View 1 (cartoon, one colour):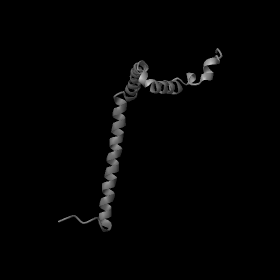
View 2: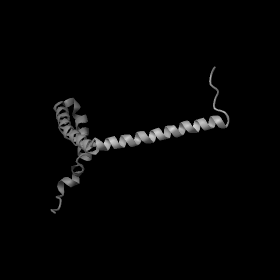
View 3: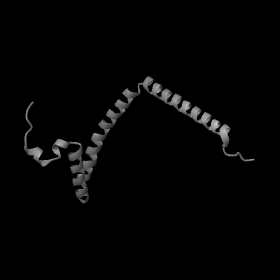
View 4: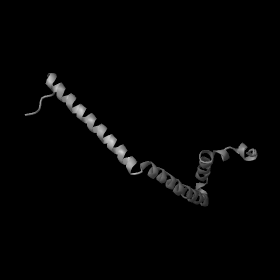
Length: 106
């Protein structure tokens, strides 16, 4: 026989008990995850991974730009890629006026 939907006060109490157990379980799991992340030196590992990724991306982008510049058919795409790199990754060189005006010494 199929189970009837929750009806009346007894059914509502069961739903509340299940929800409260689910909330308690989720809270315990979240706490355990945070404690394990901190115990395993998570912030240090995340910073190390981010730094290593950046060290990998710079040579990769250099190779991609060099390969694009080698083929005349990709001249337009190569120019767009260089413009994107100069405007977003090296913002001080992205604008032509910054090339001609020297920066003050500090």
